[in-house]
Length: 412
Image 1 (cartoon, rainbow, N blue to C red):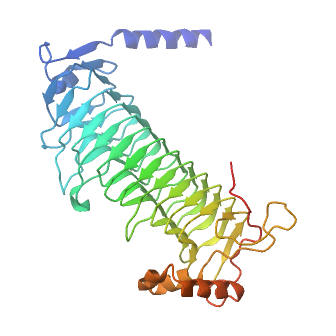
Image 2 (cartoon, helix red, strand yellow; image 1 turned 120 degrees about the vertical axis):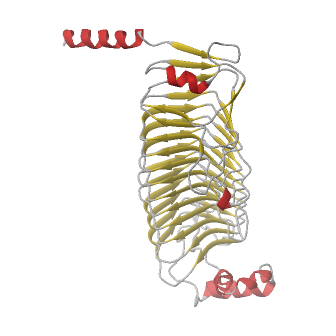
Image 3 (cartoon, one colour; image 1 turned 135 degrees about the vertical axis):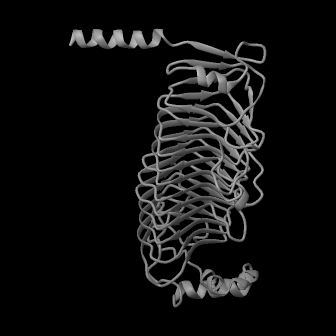
């Protein structure tokens, strides 16, 4: 064992002794980032001084390099294509300002394109006026941390995503600030990823969008004023905890779209001022627990084929519709939630209403079939219709009720 440890220590020392630092600046011997990359060997560090470097298609192939920018040197791709193309393991890029990535309908041009790479870190970079920001394909064990991404997406056809992850696994996306792209963060066929502490605002389509991606977690992210907040589609075993969905507002917008997903949890998320806080379609075995739904158009809109979902210990406050339901089938459980529209009583003072609460209004059923009826939302006549439906349900699912509604807002 001692011999093995000695050999490994000797090997590490031998490989690191050969590593060198290459300085790049306008007045240095090396003035080009591309030239520095070409002369570098695995293990080297490239230190890029503050300045303007008009370069694109900088290729790092099979070299484990550390690239560090001082005072955010500018890499200007001049709208000619991708800035960095990387196919290497164990590399890092930090402290660069990469801008002016060209738009293309035939290739995915990005500020940083990573392909078939492992064990890497992309940290604290500024990306502006980009098509795609950071694009990963068939890579693993990477960390994308603390980057600031800005662009001016005007149409989906002519814009890319801030962070795009395809056919990859074990990726951490943390503390990034993304604004003005098509999708803030996009995952497709990406498993075992952690998306946490990111801010995605004012993006054209989604703040976060993932498809065919299992066993992922997204935690403590902010999704505000996007075309729609988050879309989770065709995936399973997803954990969604502590996220904020605010002001995702529009005729076809929502805070969170769940479509054909199963075995997921939503815990302690905050939904405020969204057209539809959650739109669920063909979702099964989802646990919604300790979430706040405040001042949304629809808090929860359940569409077809949603079975064995549980809503418990959630707060529903001042939504136009707490629950909207299409169809009469119901295999979903509502229990122990707080409803601001509950008018029941609690004679034994145990904090639980003595009569069940029926959250589905007849008017929500009418609006689903005749959207123009929404103009009658606050009328006295509609109030009478809703009351009569609660007393003797005909159109809304009779068994959909919370048998133990809380009398006060739930704290956690």
